[in-house]
Length: 140
Image (cartoon, rainbow, N blue to C red; front, top):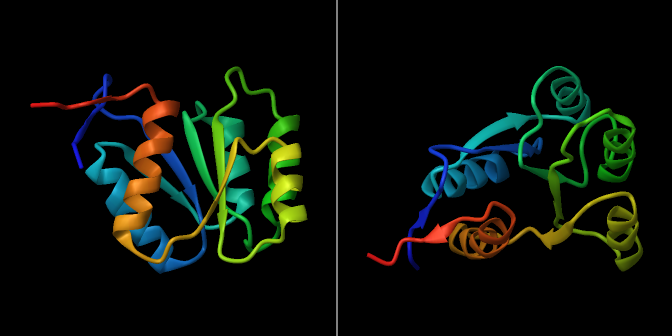
C-alpha cells in the first residue's frame, strides 16, 4: 500500500480507548501515516481537553469506556462550543445495529468494527483518513 503524505507536517488524532492493545495498534498505524496520536483513557479526559485546547481533526472513540459510553460522550461533544467540530469515528468489538445507528444520530461520522490485526486497522484507517484529512498518496 502506498505511503500517505500529509500536507501539514503532523495532524493530531485523538484516540479515546482504555484497552492497551487497541491503543498500541492505533498509535502504530497513525505514526506510520505521519499523524500525531494523542491518547485519552476515558471520555472525561477527552472532554476536558476539548474544553481547553484546540480540537483535533479526528477523534477515534471506543464505544465501551469507563465512566460513559460513546453515545454519552458524543452528546457532550455536541454541547461544547467547538469552532470546527472534529470528525468522530466510533469503534467497538460488539455493538448492535441500534447502538451503531444511535452513535451516528448523536454525531459520529462513521462506525467501524475493531479489526484484530494491524494490517486490517491500517487498511481501513488509510481509506477513512485519506478522505477526512485530505491527504494525498505518495506515488513515488
